[in-house]
Length: 462
Image (cartoon, rainbow, N blue to C red; front, top):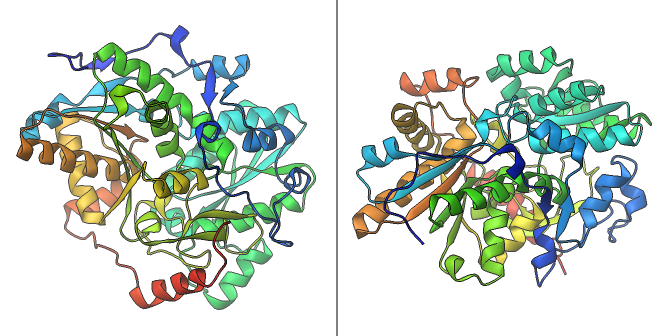
């Protein structure tokens, strides 16, 4: 279903904000393997999770309902910026001289600058209802820490953020933004937790990783009855909250009179990708004719190639082994990726739901180098006027390549990607690129293979 001329911006009214989140697990014939208790290595009980999560989020994590109602109080907050526009990238199309139609869902328009606020507000809301006083979390590039800081401020909760050291040093204005909303921030690894101290003893110059920062945040939450842990990606309930993105985009594509041939999103832990892509994948699972040939592309950095080179097995979500073991593609929970500017994508694992869909052949992963990604970002900024986050620029790179492929094949395909956040706090990275100083961080092959071999010795998911 394609039109000759679609509008530049496809808008929805406030009344059209989705009223329910979509749980893709309900539609999967083969469910993801259950999380395992880190001590017993048996399926973890909800009671064990209650030490770090509120009961309402635990219920969402394991629910078999296809749709979960969005509370009215959250819908009121969402309406401050949602629905976000779906934009026809005509400038980029003209630059590439492609017959393809390129659209992007503009999640950079949230008050915190990224898609992360969709779940940050939901998690703060449910924790507040259960009497929690403070949330502890990790952040890579700072987008998640920024969103949770804002959400905690809105619901009058304290907020403790462990920010990966490489990003802590690279992105001072992200730190300032979190502090404006009252968050307490520490560079990770830190001297404040046993997990951080253990890393610093052996690697005093560690640039950190999301796995390390998660360990620190979980340790803080587990040791304080008034504090719970909040995660910005990976877990089922986080991806659930993000499906408000894809549900809106589905309605907007219908208004545009088109349907995607290709869906694209960047992937670290998987929240923006899952939230954007899952409602479209539902169309495929339900065998809708319009989605029969739709391709779904997950884009990651070649410096942290979790889906393209990782092993599918049970692994910890954090470095210290405090979290449940998840059935996912992983590079090894001890692996510390190179300090690339896309800090939000420097995670050793990925959401189990996304791993399951990759294994089922419903998602195709690809990886790009830093310079390939920044080249795409500059093309997008010059043609569309938006400076994208380095993470989001991975999706732009793939969209450009798909559009050029369509050009070479003479096809007018419809390509849709998620612009998960803006890059206005990443100008130091862009300056490095424009001055020719941005290096393509490469993995240490010997080190990576050592971690992958260790994973292959573990028992695979049943």
